[in-house]
Amino acid sequence: FTLAATHYHSKRQRSSSQSQNNACTTTTNNNQHDQTPPPSDTLKGYEAMIGNTPLVELSNLSKLLLNHPQKKIYVKMESLNPGGTGKDRAALNMLKEAEANGLLPPPLLLSSANESKNFTITDKNNHNKSSSIFTKSINQALERTKTGGIVVEGTSGSTGISLASLCTSRGHAVIVVMPDDQAYEKRCMLRRLNVVLHVVKNCAISNPNHYVNVAKRIALEINDLKKECIQAFFVNQFENLANYKAHYTSTGPEILYQLRTVHHVSCCSAFVMSSGTGGTIAGVGQYLKENSSSSSSSSGDDKKTTNIILVDP
Image (cartoon, rainbow, N blue to C red):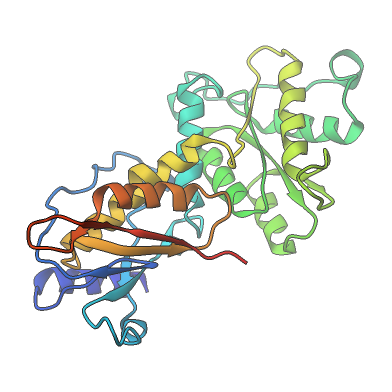
């Protein structure tokens, strides 16, 4: 499918006979093009595969727009990120901001220490405030970190997979707190990525034992140790602005660039998606509203901005 999408894009670039539009979105035709390419990617390894996912026209679905034959529907193939979701973008940005702001040690590739250190602790001298199950999880993470950094997050799975994949190369250990109603396959995947997995009973966010609240407690508990060279970072994807920024600075510009240079469409009429944390729809939505507009009159007045549509159960 990836090869077919690449061939399809190349073919569309060679032909300007038809104009088309945006993924999970609908757009209108226009001959204007954005000649500014996305920022060049200087990342390596796993990180270099994140983003630049295909924008594919759903031609049969577009035919259902009988009253708007000039409009097309496109899908942004975020499943082609290496972690299988768009969470890769947010995870990378949240980790990089944490490292830049001193909330995590520098990644292993930038660190002068290239060998693992023994960071383990004992209940008797250092950890008398925690429950035994927390002690076990924390010690496992301390054994696995190569930088002294421990990334802690409450997640149903996808963000945890992205964080774990990135931290494998960056040298940080990962503790994931997951509700017990998630698929067994997600647990297996996380464990294979060397994650310390802590499963809790699913409950309301107001409950102190909710998986997000437990993750926050574990991170605080690690930092309360005040152990030299150890830093725990609670990712907090629901309230971390780096989540939103990842999509405002990459996914949104990428969609508009692909619309204009590949599909020869200048504006996006609507952006449609479901939502978890809200980072993607907020970041992409704001970018498209600010940068993709169409004029309803020849004078350029009465500009129409992109409609943002949330599909929620």
